[in-house]
Image (cartoon, rainbow, N blue to C red; front, top):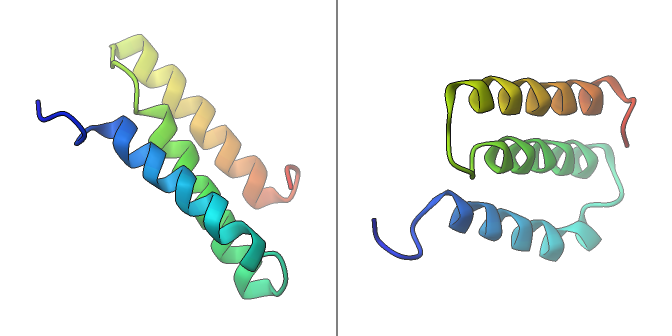
Length: 77
């Protein structure tokens, strides 16, 4: 494995991108939609950034999809 090219690296880059883009994506429907998509991607990448076992995979996938569903449903803002 090459150091610096793993799932945690991608998670770090996505989180840094969110930190940098968040102030610019607060107003407007397009900006809010794009921000929601980015949050969903971060949630899914974060769920798979750790070591995988079958039980852990099912649990992480379920929690990530629940989070994305709640965000899309407007329950979590």
